[in-house]
Length: 74
Image 1 (spheres, rainbow, N blue to C red):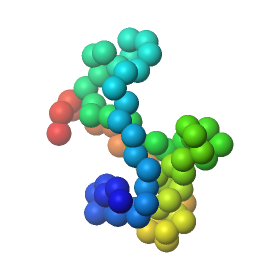
Image 2 (spheres, rainbow, N blue to C red):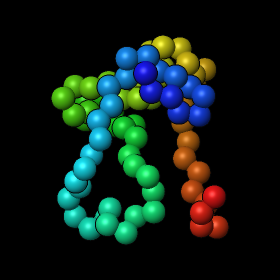
Image 3 (cartoon, helix red, strand yellow):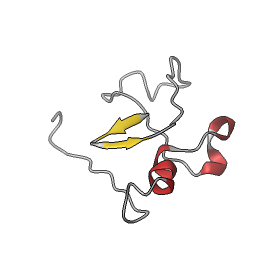
């Protein structure tokens, strides 16, 4: 299971990336990457997290958003 903000997805496959190509991740101030790609782009056919949220009826609508603050941390 994988839990994010109180939503628990059963049988979600999860992997840790220990190396990423390029310089984009060297100075990045974030903790990681959560797979939100289309299933056709998923590595090894793993069902992406949000697709599992929808399949398990854990969200009312097939919509998600990302908020990016201009105030730094927090």
